[in-house]
Structures are given as C-alpha cells and as structure tokens.
Image 1 (cartoon, helix red, strand yellow):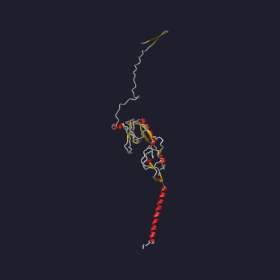
Image 2 (cartoon, rainbow, N blue to C red):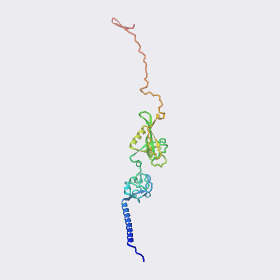
Image 3 (tube, rainbow, N blue to C red):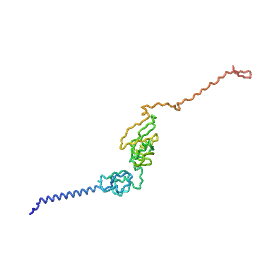
Image 4 (cartoon, rainbow, N blue to C red):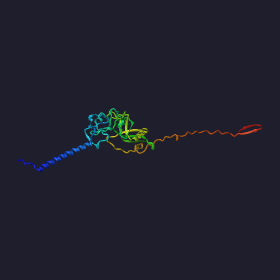
Length: 277
C-alpha cells in the first residue's frame, strides 16, 4: 500500500508554487512598468546619406526607446519619414528627428550644408590656386594671402586661415563624388567675422589654397614670410629712385646787364644837350 505524502511535502509544494507565481507576477508587473517608460521611435535600418530620399526599407519603428533617451523632436510614425529628404548623414539604428528632414518637393540648397554658426563665402580659384583642381566638397584647406605689409612696405605671405571646410566648388557643386574639383570657384564655411578678413585680403593681394590631409586638425602658428626671409635675412640694395621733390631743379645762367656810360646834361640858354665824357 502506497504511503501518502505528509503535511510537510504538501507545504513545500505549495511554497514552491507560491514563489513561482510571485516571480511571474513580479516579472509581468516589471514589463508593464518598463513599457510605460518606453515608446517606439522611427530609426534608420542603414546609413542614410545627405540629400537622399528615404523609403520604407531604410527605416523601422519596431524598436522601443526609454523615454529619457529619446532625442528631442524624434519621430514616432513611419509616415512622417518615408518619402522625405535627409538633410544630414543619419547612422544606422539612429532615431530620426524632424529637423533631419525636408519634404521631397523642397529644393535642396547650399544653406542646408552650412554648419551652425558659420557662413559661406566664395573665392575665385584657378588650377594653380586650387592645387591642380584636386579640391572637392568636404575637403579641409588652409588659406594663404600675399599682400604689401603697410609698416615695412614689403610683400608678406601669411597663413590667413587654417582647417577650413570646403562646402562647394565651381557652380555650387556639393557632391564630393563629382568628376571635377575646384577650377573656377570655391565656397568655404567660415566664422562670420572671417568673411571680412577673406574679403579684405582678396582685395589687398592674392589668395592661394593649400589642401590638408584627412583627419589633420593641427593648427600651425605662423608669423608670415617676407622677401627678407628668403634673402638670407637682408634685403638686396636697390638703386634709389629720386622722388618728385628730390629731382634736380634746372639752373638758368643769365648774362649780366650791359653797363651804361655816365651822361652829363649841358644847358646853354634855352637849349639842353646830353653828352657823354
């Protein structure tokens, strides 16, 4: 005859079932609590380049983000994103914000590529000035200026600006994958006050551009170079040129005035006669 389980066994089974039920209830409540603190956002499924029209294959809304980690202006509906144009590079798995997009019908302008707080200014270039037409949008360059130094009256070549972003080349071309580099114009992103500096330097002298290597952020201190620096520390003597005030005034020699012989007036009665001795 089988022996019935005692009261202790029944109690143990009941305790195990109670603990299991409590764990399930705790897990359920935790999931409910976490779901209240999360909400789905639209994120990219792949890297999206600027000026790209976004389709449904590029985005998803299945991933829920903690509310405290969701970026400001993040979009939550796929219909808010699909068919729009990306203004910047969007990384895969990155939430998409309303400020990242423009409607498909809105024309893309260079103004969208200007970094915040910067200004765009164009300079004229040639094959020599633009490093053999090798500079393209996205490159970084240094700007050199050659102009007459007002104190020494010598030509000074100085590194005017360094690590400047190239926004566009030629006729507003912003595609770095284009076949041609800069050969007629170059549009640069600079600080607002630097637009005055470039304009004044361009008017006062000549500008030249130096291409920087990738990922080189180093800034080099520069005092500039004059003619004296590559003549061994001295300027070759030049033949002085007379100014208008220093030019010799012509000298005119006048002959002496002819001498006059003395004269005597002789009066005889009513007659007067002048004679010379």
